[in-house]
Image (tube, rainbow, N blue to C red; front, top):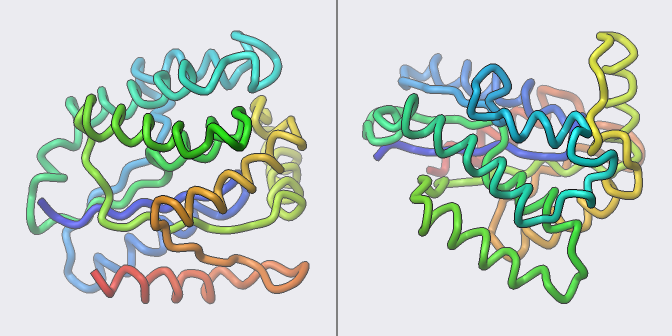
Length: 220
Protein backbone atom coordinates (compact mmCIF):
# COMPACT_ATOMS: atom_id res chain seq x y z
CA UNK A 1 0.00 0.00 0.00
CA UNK A 2 1.24 3.48 -0.87
CA UNK A 3 0.76 6.66 1.11
CA UNK A 4 -2.78 7.89 1.75
CA UNK A 5 -3.14 11.60 2.56
CA UNK A 6 -6.42 13.35 3.42
CA UNK A 7 -7.00 17.10 3.43
CA UNK A 8 -10.16 18.31 5.16
CA UNK A 9 -11.62 21.45 6.68
CA UNK A 10 -14.77 23.52 6.90
CA UNK A 11 -16.31 24.79 3.67
CA UNK A 12 -14.25 27.68 2.32
CA UNK A 13 -11.04 26.61 4.06
CA UNK A 14 -9.22 25.96 0.77
CA UNK A 15 -9.24 22.16 0.65
CA UNK A 16 -9.42 21.98 -3.13
CA UNK A 17 -6.70 24.58 -3.66
CA UNK A 18 -4.32 22.96 -1.16
CA UNK A 19 -4.99 19.49 -2.58
CA UNK A 20 -4.02 20.71 -6.06
CA UNK A 21 -0.84 22.39 -4.78
CA UNK A 22 0.24 19.31 -2.84
CA UNK A 23 -0.38 17.02 -5.80
CA UNK A 24 1.67 19.26 -8.08
CA UNK A 25 4.53 19.35 -5.56
CA UNK A 26 4.57 15.56 -5.19
CA UNK A 27 4.58 15.06 -8.95
CA UNK A 28 7.50 17.45 -9.29
CA UNK A 29 9.34 15.14 -6.88
CA UNK A 30 8.66 12.27 -9.29
CA UNK A 31 5.88 10.66 -7.27
CA UNK A 32 2.94 8.88 -8.88
CA UNK A 33 -0.17 10.56 -7.48
CA UNK A 34 -3.86 9.76 -7.60
CA UNK A 35 -6.31 12.45 -6.50
CA UNK A 36 -9.76 11.91 -5.02
CA UNK A 37 -12.54 14.29 -4.02
CA UNK A 38 -15.58 13.42 -1.94
CA UNK A 39 -18.50 13.36 -2.35
CA UNK A 40 -18.26 12.08 -5.94
CA UNK A 41 -21.04 14.33 -7.18
CA UNK A 42 -20.86 13.15 -10.80
CA UNK A 43 -21.44 9.51 -9.82
CA UNK A 44 -24.68 7.68 -9.03
CA UNK A 45 -22.94 6.64 -5.79
CA UNK A 46 -23.64 10.10 -4.35
CA UNK A 47 -27.40 10.12 -5.05
CA UNK A 48 -28.41 10.05 -1.37
CA UNK A 49 -25.69 12.56 -0.48
CA UNK A 50 -27.01 14.98 -3.09
CA UNK A 51 -30.59 14.53 -1.91
CA UNK A 52 -29.48 15.28 1.64
CA UNK A 53 -27.34 18.32 0.81
CA UNK A 54 -29.98 19.74 -1.56
CA UNK A 55 -32.49 19.74 1.28
CA UNK A 56 -34.77 17.06 -0.16
CA UNK A 57 -34.70 15.16 3.14
CA UNK A 58 -35.21 18.29 5.23
CA UNK A 59 -34.14 21.90 5.10
CA UNK A 60 -31.92 21.62 8.19
CA UNK A 61 -28.92 19.27 8.62
CA UNK A 62 -30.45 17.90 11.84
CA UNK A 63 -33.50 16.63 9.91
CA UNK A 64 -31.31 13.65 8.93
CA UNK A 65 -29.68 12.08 11.97
CA UNK A 66 -25.93 11.62 12.29
CA UNK A 67 -25.93 7.87 11.66
CA UNK A 68 -28.15 7.94 8.56
CA UNK A 69 -26.23 10.83 6.98
CA UNK A 70 -22.93 9.09 7.78
CA UNK A 71 -24.11 6.02 5.88
CA UNK A 72 -24.92 8.14 2.81
CA UNK A 73 -21.39 9.56 2.64
CA UNK A 74 -19.72 6.25 3.57
CA UNK A 75 -21.56 4.39 0.80
CA UNK A 76 -20.41 6.99 -1.74
CA UNK A 77 -16.80 6.44 -0.64
CA UNK A 78 -17.16 2.65 -0.64
CA UNK A 79 -18.55 2.48 -4.18
CA UNK A 80 -15.85 4.85 -5.39
CA UNK A 81 -13.18 2.74 -3.68
CA UNK A 82 -14.40 -0.59 -5.07
CA UNK A 83 -14.98 0.63 -8.63
CA UNK A 84 -12.23 3.19 -9.09
CA UNK A 85 -9.21 3.61 -6.80
CA UNK A 86 -8.72 0.24 -5.08
CA UNK A 87 -5.71 -0.56 -7.26
CA UNK A 88 -4.13 2.85 -6.68
CA UNK A 89 -4.32 2.59 -2.90
CA UNK A 90 -2.72 -0.87 -3.01
CA UNK A 91 0.17 0.27 -5.22
CA UNK A 92 3.22 0.85 -2.94
CA UNK A 93 4.55 3.51 -5.33
CA UNK A 94 1.41 5.66 -5.43
CA UNK A 95 0.45 8.60 -3.27
CA UNK A 96 -3.33 8.91 -2.94
CA UNK A 97 -4.46 12.41 -1.96
CA UNK A 98 -8.11 12.95 -1.02
CA UNK A 99 -10.06 16.17 -0.65
CA UNK A 100 -12.37 15.13 2.24
CA UNK A 101 -12.86 11.57 3.49
CA UNK A 102 -14.24 9.86 6.61
CA UNK A 103 -13.03 12.94 8.47
CA UNK A 104 -15.97 14.88 7.01
CA UNK A 105 -18.42 12.55 8.75
CA UNK A 106 -16.52 12.96 12.00
CA UNK A 107 -16.98 16.73 11.78
CA UNK A 108 -20.35 17.31 10.16
CA UNK A 109 -22.29 14.45 11.74
CA UNK A 110 -20.64 14.55 15.17
CA UNK A 111 -21.88 18.12 15.54
CA UNK A 112 -25.52 16.94 15.50
CA UNK A 113 -25.10 15.02 18.74
CA UNK A 114 -24.85 16.14 22.38
CA UNK A 115 -21.26 16.47 23.58
CA UNK A 116 -21.50 13.48 25.93
CA UNK A 117 -22.10 11.22 22.91
CA UNK A 118 -19.15 12.45 20.83
CA UNK A 119 -16.63 9.82 21.91
CA UNK A 120 -19.07 6.97 21.31
CA UNK A 121 -19.95 8.32 17.86
CA UNK A 122 -16.29 8.53 16.81
CA UNK A 123 -15.77 4.93 17.94
CA UNK A 124 -18.84 3.84 15.99
CA UNK A 125 -17.73 5.77 12.89
CA UNK A 126 -14.21 4.30 12.93
CA UNK A 127 -15.57 0.78 13.33
CA UNK A 128 -18.26 1.30 10.67
CA UNK A 129 -16.13 2.82 7.91
CA UNK A 130 -12.76 1.18 8.49
CA UNK A 131 -13.63 -2.18 10.09
CA UNK A 132 -17.12 -3.09 8.91
CA UNK A 133 -17.00 -1.52 5.43
CA UNK A 134 -13.26 -1.95 5.01
CA UNK A 135 -12.27 1.47 3.68
CA UNK A 136 -8.52 2.23 3.80
CA UNK A 137 -7.22 4.17 6.82
CA UNK A 138 -5.29 7.36 5.91
CA UNK A 139 -1.62 7.68 6.81
CA UNK A 140 -2.25 11.31 7.73
CA UNK A 141 -5.26 13.61 7.93
CA UNK A 142 -4.47 17.30 7.61
CA UNK A 143 -7.23 19.50 8.97
CA UNK A 144 -7.34 23.08 7.66
CA UNK A 145 -8.51 25.01 10.71
CA UNK A 146 -10.48 28.14 9.91
CA UNK A 147 -12.96 29.76 12.33
CA UNK A 148 -16.60 29.69 11.13
CA UNK A 149 -16.83 33.46 10.62
CA UNK A 150 -13.91 33.42 8.17
CA UNK A 151 -15.07 30.17 6.56
CA UNK A 152 -18.62 31.40 5.95
CA UNK A 153 -17.37 34.71 4.59
CA UNK A 154 -15.33 32.87 1.96
CA UNK A 155 -18.20 30.51 1.12
CA UNK A 156 -20.61 33.40 0.57
CA UNK A 157 -18.10 35.26 -1.59
CA UNK A 158 -17.55 32.15 -3.70
CA UNK A 159 -21.29 31.63 -4.08
CA UNK A 160 -21.80 35.25 -5.18
CA UNK A 161 -18.94 35.09 -7.68
CA UNK A 162 -19.72 31.71 -9.23
CA UNK A 163 -23.48 31.40 -8.76
CA UNK A 164 -22.92 28.11 -6.96
CA UNK A 165 -25.86 27.26 -4.71
CA UNK A 166 -25.00 26.99 -1.02
CA UNK A 167 -25.98 23.63 0.50
CA UNK A 168 -27.87 23.11 3.78
CA UNK A 169 -24.60 22.89 5.73
CA UNK A 170 -23.33 26.21 4.42
CA UNK A 171 -26.67 27.98 4.99
CA UNK A 172 -26.79 27.13 8.69
CA UNK A 173 -24.43 29.39 10.65
CA UNK A 174 -25.09 27.73 14.02
CA UNK A 175 -24.44 24.33 12.46
CA UNK A 176 -21.08 25.47 11.06
CA UNK A 177 -20.07 26.74 14.49
CA UNK A 178 -20.88 23.34 15.99
CA UNK A 179 -18.86 21.69 13.22
CA UNK A 180 -15.84 23.80 14.15
CA UNK A 181 -16.03 22.59 17.76
CA UNK A 182 -16.48 19.00 16.55
CA UNK A 183 -13.44 19.36 14.28
CA UNK A 184 -11.18 20.50 17.11
CA UNK A 185 -12.43 17.59 19.23
CA UNK A 186 -11.82 15.11 16.40
CA UNK A 187 -8.31 16.44 15.79
CA UNK A 188 -7.45 15.70 19.40
CA UNK A 189 -9.16 12.31 19.63
CA UNK A 190 -8.18 10.94 16.21
CA UNK A 191 -4.70 12.40 15.90
CA UNK A 192 -5.30 14.67 12.93
CA UNK A 193 -2.68 17.33 12.18
CA UNK A 194 -4.17 20.81 12.52
CA UNK A 195 -3.04 23.36 9.96
CA UNK A 196 -3.99 26.78 11.32
CA UNK A 197 -5.00 28.84 8.29
CA UNK A 198 -5.21 32.24 9.95
CA UNK A 199 -3.38 34.74 12.10
CA UNK A 200 -5.81 36.77 14.19
CA UNK A 201 -8.61 37.82 11.86
CA UNK A 202 -6.47 37.45 8.74
CA UNK A 203 -6.14 34.36 6.55
CA UNK A 204 -2.60 33.13 5.92
CA UNK A 205 -1.35 33.16 2.35
CA UNK A 206 -2.00 30.13 0.17
CA UNK A 207 1.74 29.51 -0.26
CA UNK A 208 2.39 29.75 3.48
CA UNK A 209 -0.25 27.12 4.22
CA UNK A 210 0.95 24.94 1.34
CA UNK A 211 4.54 24.94 2.65
CA UNK A 212 3.36 23.74 6.09
CA UNK A 213 1.30 20.96 4.48
CA UNK A 214 4.25 19.80 2.35
CA UNK A 215 6.46 19.78 5.44
CA UNK A 216 4.01 17.51 7.26
CA UNK A 217 3.64 15.18 4.27
CA UNK A 218 7.43 14.94 3.82
CA UNK A 219 7.60 13.28 7.24
CA UNK A 220 5.79 10.27 5.85
